Image 1 (tube, helix red, strand yellow):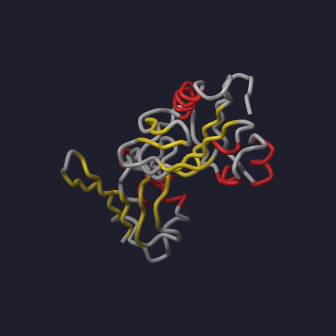
Image 2 (cartoon, one colour):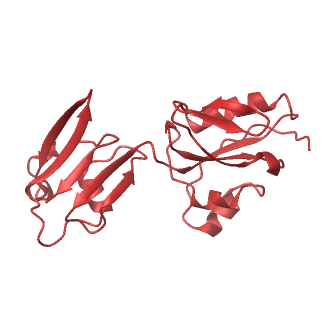
Image 3 (cartoon, helix red, strand yellow):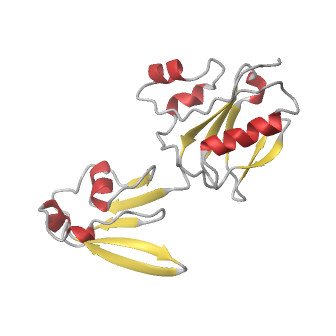
Length: 199
């Protein structure tokens, strides 16, 4: 089916499945209901899961995972670079490539799941695990996302582990001090791959 219209770039942050269905094009795969909330400046990376939607071209739409080499593969279009681009830039590239097969294709790129930019928290917190860094996030904020420290945690002896240029670094963090407004310089912004250890 040939389609006329301008490119649509949508970064969908859904509070509910119903809200997602209202915001997404009718042809969007059901996976769009679990789209991640990202800023327009979010940069796609390897292992991120995307939903690419061609409006009224359902057979070309679907979920794709960014490969370790930074590319995705789409029906008819083949390989397209995705890592390093924002969703809007990727949508523009896909639309340009699709113009060979469609008239004025209308493309939407949705970030469904972020796997390339995550920080980890382990130990004595309510919900240890990996958490996406969709924007700037401090140590204290990630601890809050993990449900806070447990009753018997040694909250004054928390460690943040980081790999920088092949070197391992460890930073001490005192939850007790920061929660009381002291030594706030400890509460720095996390980087992808950081691990918070709560003993």
